[in-house]
Length: 319
Ligand SMILES: [Zn+2]
Image 1 (cartoon, rainbow, N blue to C red):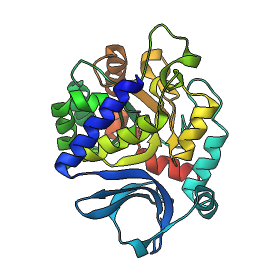
Image 2: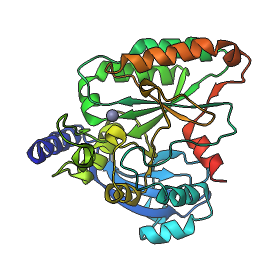
Image 3: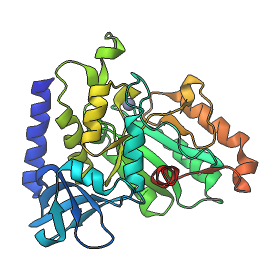
Image 4: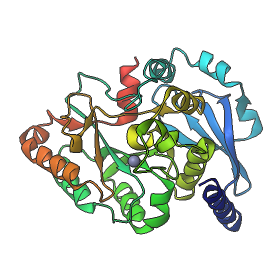
């Protein structure tokens, strides 16, 4: 696997070099010097500019910006953490530290319990099957009279992006047409998984996993495909231990779990993070979801049952 991953790195380097798109991608912590102050998470070079992935610590929205050297101040992570301790981001990081020990489903799994609805998250784990486009069509049909664009969270892997360029274009097109507002979440590059291994040594806990590659190669692949990585991370299989969880926090990221994995018969509650797989590998979850929106159609119509934007919900919960 290590060899495979270095081949992927080489291919990505080749792609970035050939298209002159990304170089020197790295974790780079600091703050912007102008107001409103943003947290700086990554730095790279692209089209003769120095670019940064920055986070608004109050709204938890990320963006990509080109900045001159005097517009940023590099700081050790602990200093950044100190400065943002009173923001939504600081509070979310703090509460993540209390949820880091579960083998399954560690991280944020539910947000604001006063919400009249939930946040929908869909995982695009590696798959040879096409994207389940019907779920997006049904979603738009059901929610669009009440909500437009519809907020959804999609967690994505590098291997899925490699194999599904047209499906990715389909999703980006739904965004540019104003139908969906997608929060893109890193779900690791390779999404390692071995059907024979027990969970404590499976997924990202498998021996010889290069966590740096899993996080940073996937962020680069997302940027290369025009997706802005959000502040969230979802563990493959929702499996982590304290060590790997804390390393994800050290990238500045907020792990998300789920308290309502529909295919496992977990029913959504107010403020749930609902999980379905739109990668063709979990038809039961998709059927459950479609039945759910049919059942709730009257409440959707009169806006008493809605989908919520994940960054906004997490930001609100930390206030
Ligand atoms: Zn997955």
